[in-house]
Image (cartoon, rainbow, N blue to C red):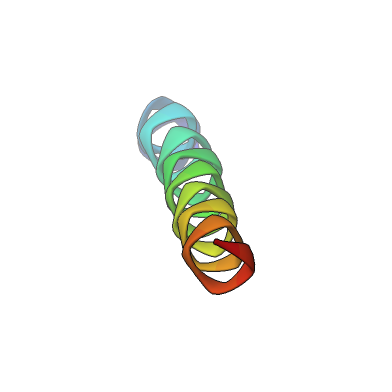
Length: 35
């Protein structure tokens, strides 16, 4: 459990990064599509 808790922070940050990247990609795609 302790080891998992230590690894949990990294796993929690990864999803956030992926979400931000996906959002940025969607924004770029929408901007290109609109323009």
